[in-house]
Length: 172
Image 1 (cartoon, rainbow, N blue to C red):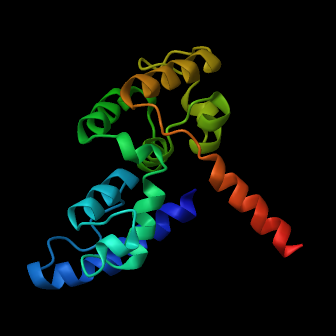
Image 2: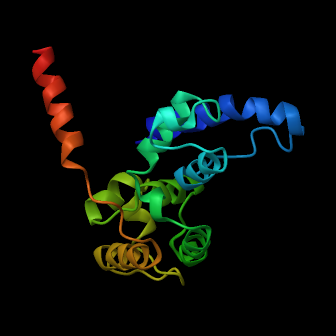
């Protein structure tokens, strides 16, 4: 998951190089971008699912990234939902990287949360006041908040899974 986000960030830096040279650089390496921000940027540049429909407007690789991001939770997020999440997650003492993972991947189970959030058990065994609490209840409370703030992600496309299985069969 982190590799895809880094690749998207790298692509954005490569693509925005032309725009940065035209407009002047505002802030070099200003921080990490969420998948939503990359998707929003690609939309503003005219990216479409059909690479033939965006010839000249954006690179074919940008169309591929755009198509990929439409299958992630970023496709139906808003700036307001991200700001609300950041505000409501302050009591959980999450690192910026953890917040970015949650925004990009929208955990829906305790297993997802433990996989995405570094030292999840240590961070969720105390409440906002620093008092000891039930870690499992706190994780569930966090997941409920994530479900309230972020829209339900798009359903997984069965065709994608079949394509992956077909490619594996061909390699054997």
